[in-house]
Length: 567
Ligand code: C2E
Ligand code: CA
Ligand code: CA
Image 1 (cartoon, rainbow, N blue to C red):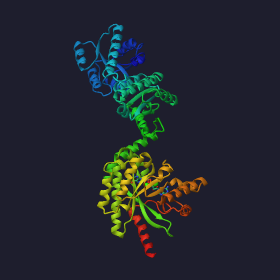
Image 2 (image 1 turned 90 degrees about the horizontal axis):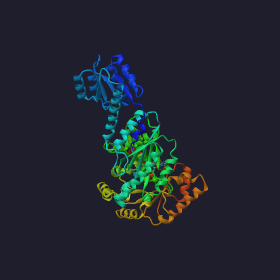
Image 3 (image 1 turned 90 degrees about the vertical axis):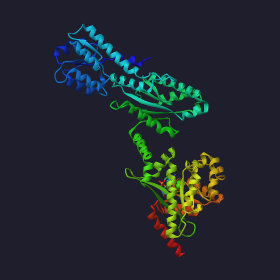
Image 4 (image 1 turned 135 degrees about the vertical axis):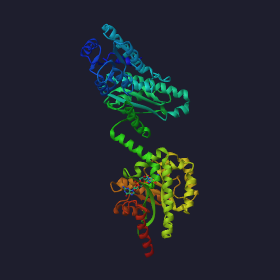
């Protein structure tokens, strides 16, 4: 089933190069019924025409003796040209010597002058074009042995040829990937994995059939589809979803699809599929969506993300990461007491300016870079504590964020231990903030790790409490020393009765558990007053201060020390 057959009927483009007008006319008359014919009157004009329109020509008929640039030179130029080199050339000559020379240079055939019968010329042209098209296709192993789909090289060659004759048609590039396919292999064995791939191939073939397209398997679990343009992919997606229900091990398999609609025909087909793949990859961690469409914003976003990931190590070396400190104030003892601070990372990026951790932390959590970054922050915070001890003779407690990814890193405990020991820090002053959602994901393992950290002397703050999904029941059995109420509660507290009740309930639970509570994201005096009444112990938020670089934070310490003297 060679779909190239579909494009067999399209008129091929032929360039006739001859300095004598009479020859151009004779050949033009012979060929124009079957071919789309263009003319050039010398070698220079021929090269110009070829270079301008590139590979759309299927054949060049070339006179050898011409002024300015002769036929031999034209052949050499074509053969040396990256794009044009595969266009076959038939030379037209009356000299036997010239035939041999031109064939040696790479001409495909020759036609003698004066001209043969028109049928002979036509037959030669047709044969050479066919040979060359088949040669280009045969160069690549046509199909993938496992699925019977085209191989990647063949697929792109096929696109190239299809585009030569059908450039106007609107088309879409689609990349389909199986998320964590290796798990299927690991869980059920390779043979079952192969079965799944064959099953998906069946679905893909139905799709390409329906949408006059073709497809290849480009990597183990990735398929590329080149389809007639669809405005709307709803039916496409529901078709796949429906067919996927019958797939072996359906519940372990998730397919994600990236689509680049209406591909730009002026750019390289490989780029079409790179774009589709990029949006497909964006879905890797988004379980709510199965299909995504390329657009500039999304693309720029992913390029931006790539830059951040690539630049991270260098940024550490160049000291572009800086640690800011946001104060936490005690509010229950008659005055606002500066108790501690949270270390928050900032990236002073020379290209993008100050980048918020909300942008890069989730990226670094996906690829293990977070461990490096967090270690850096812990080390910075510890050395800052040491500096403040020397300067102010106090042990000023600092909390650092611990990503849920850090916790499972084998060096985690040693790393923390080394950091506090090398700066002679009492672990009880080095608090670890762990988000509530980390507890939810792996309860038992996490509880064990947290217990171990507490045994080592660290205190644990459960961060963002209320944003995760831990049940009330669970919260009573989880180990932690301080609870940080999620900002959302504070945001909504004054909005309605119900949200207010929620804050009261959280406060009740915390009282029951006997741990202190921190309210985060407090921006207004009114909020401070409400929280104070409810018995909240500590407050962190813009009401007191934004996160500050160390030298500015020192002013807060100095003010606090001043106040303590006056008590
Ligand atoms: P988080 O741990 O919940 O940190 C609190 C965030 O709330 C900080 O944002 C802080 O600047 C912001 N914030 C504090 N008070 C207010 C307020 O009154 N109003 C508003 N609108 N925001 C307030 P930031 O610094 O952008 O950090 C965002 C998140 O990035 C942090 O959330 C934390 O999850 C993560 N992060 C920051 N630094 C680190 C780090 O060194 N390591 C790791 N693993 N995560 C970090
Ligand atoms: Ca935090
Ligand atoms: Ca928080």
